[in-house]
Length: 118
Length: 92
Image 1: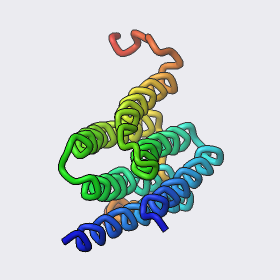
Image 2: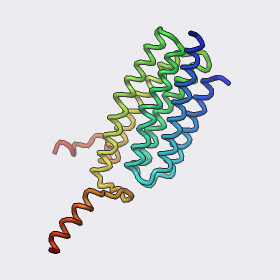
Image 3: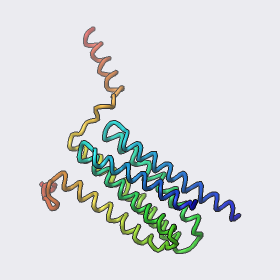
């Protein structure tokens, strides 16, 4: 039982670190701001959750776990709010996403152009 | 190797990558995004390092950092939009 718990702690912490590093790689390599937001949010949800759950599994059920739960709840509330505010501010400022091809719009516009030509 | 040390190295690498983006970032929003991610990773780093050194009481500090990170980011966004933290432009 102790062995299984230790293995679960290892799994959670290592997977959490890996997801954090994937998000860090994404925020560095993604082509424009909106895709970078997408990459950053994975570290806030999956990475933070796995790391904090791993710590909670290690500590057992006591006051430490309650504090970890508070940290996790706070991150869950504030991180989407912050991401939403950030993207909304960028969109209101008129920041466009030059690397994203809006296929629905272009195909629809092309179809309308075709009808107009006929 | 201690599992907490492994997790700490992962979080530190992530913080380094976020810092690089904060310095490179072409727009102010990229920098704010990277700074926010850096703050979130600070929370995780404090939590993990508390367990690494055998003092999990540091979680109180992590809680405080999470709150300050959120408030700081909203303040920064307001400032970048209105160039003023107490603007009444929204009321008009």
